[in-house]
Image 1 (tube, rainbow, N blue to C red):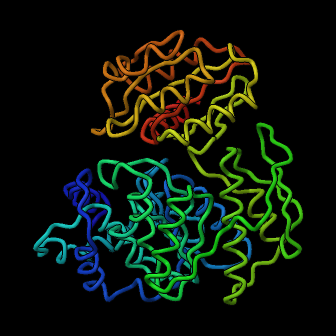
Image 2 (cartoon, helix red, strand yellow):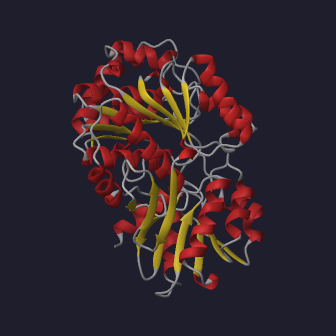
Length: 426
């Protein structure tokens, strides 16, 4: 099977429909000989921050000489960036071979697996074949019924809980917390970040029910001491960890993500992984993660930040106010998926922007630009609609001076299209 054939097979699978449950994933893994049993993992769930946490852990562990497999979603640069081993995307030939191994199980399934379920099987199969030391596995949606919940973790993690994907996970913090807490496993520490009180009580109750150890990251003091357009510096209150850290990821939300990463390193050290402080310092200094407050250009500045829910949008507004203090030098390009809290995201961002360009990505889930204008256009002093992300980027870039900052936000699909467009015309 060629890579193009494998991609065509994947594209025919359900990939917008949500099909809860692990039965389809387990059938695929059974057909592959249960590769998920061949490696330990860190299982990362939560509403925001999952990708950043995985990226930081990946960089730190590889700097320590650990052989790491990483699976994240969605893609930001290329479809293949969802699966990486030792920082390198899985080659096209291995994608094709892995899909070919699963093809009979896909074709013969009584209930067709989703694209994400097949990609999860592909990742686990690749990790086993490459004999990795540790997998970093990002939850796709929720946790309890997510395909990745077939993994056997050394550490489970819930970065945070806020309202998102309410049509699937529930329209309250308590319902969403219950879904995310479903990744708790007997005898496995479940590390969690800052949670609303009702979410924390549900997480701790789930841990008690299944025999997991709840571990709050709150006991580790992490304070940001500096930020500029290149990096941020943090002071860490632990004698066993570096006293100061320079981090290549800029968003203010990275403070809590960093705390989770450092607590995970402490847990991994306890179970035998050798992660020296020099690896922590060098890995975090050099880490990059596309689309998460990514400064793609300077003078004028171009910032890409998914900010696909209200909490993320509010943090983006605060960050951009700190780095670009002149309000009239900020321009927003906004596109949002139809199933999101569109007005809530718009209001959070309008706090920091007077000028906004509105667009829709090519995703079938994208809110059409005219509907976006009707719902959020009036929140900004000036708003303009564009037929595509590429047109919006070109038109807005032409208006910028060297001191201006363009922020692309509201959806990772919009961010991905803008990123590809800007890379092509550089």
